[in-house]
Length: 495
Picture (cartoon, rainbow, N blue to C red):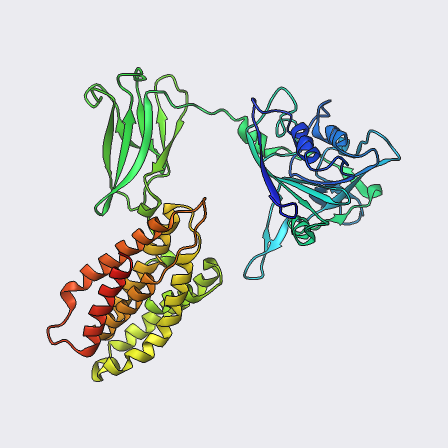
């Protein structure tokens, strides 16, 4: 890394990797010998008891002798008639080691926000981070560690947590340091004379401490696959390795309806995978398992063989050409465009109703309108190419861009479905093919290789060509001749 870049490091917490704050101090010391004098802690939960090894005490060992600690917390009003503020945190947080040279301040943040429709909604605080700085170095740790002894591996009980540590020099990269600061919610300082502390139940660790039944080792993986137009649930059993629990039953999580009851007649003879045809339109998220001595249900997660087999969200199913042009050509996030898509779907229904009376397009030859329509499509084609050229890190992401509900295949299907003539269909598919052939993927050592991306693009082009091969009219016009040449040229460009 250059000295002006943001450095990013992983800080894992586990029973084998304890003392998270000590290791955090080591990261700081590897960059600067001068310790931080200011820290801001954000956590929804803290230790309920005043433990001797609590992080609120240990954090002072990471600071200069004169240090300021801030806590971002949630609050409630004590009453309508009182100015007192109920701080949802333990009172011991305000304790310091050296009164007079160390201070602790509290900042309240609202758990209410505004959604895209300008309506007030609940936004519970769940961010866990520590922001530390001196005159130059800024360090931010963010991740899953609550500011608790278990969250940072400081006591007997240690959670499994994952955090990222960002460090940057504010002198050499002021912009990056500002961005780290802007990642934190702005809190309003609370008057220390008005604070009333009230412990907040640790919902995270309450869930962790709940009784969890482990699956018997006799059960392996449950994998959902796609076969033709239906799902197949494949269950794995280690028959030769482990003993089958007596009274074993497997339920579908939706309504505890028995999916498969393992008994003497159904038991596989060896370690094997047991396929079950899945009748529902949606695949299961998990199964529930019980046996004679279980005293409850064990959770059996269902693994998806590939993201591409998952059903398309209803809002994105069978999008019209007009909707696809809007989505592909827009820089707004997809969720912001869903309402606009819904309005288009509704207007399309109204148009279809009116066409039952008369379809004006059937009264004229639309071949002359192809170039006009192409202008509307060309911008979306260019945007699609730019999207495909952006770095792609997984095969699932590439599959989404090419064959997803707003990808190249969906656009081709909409063109074939809504084209007003055979010439228009062939011409627009040809233009799409040429645009795909111009894709120049941006790659790095952590992305998919250029060869992989182009091979996937070529596969889409080949399918387009073979799907259209039987649709070229015998009385070829100049447009159909051009379209045939263009599609073949596009495939050749990627060879």
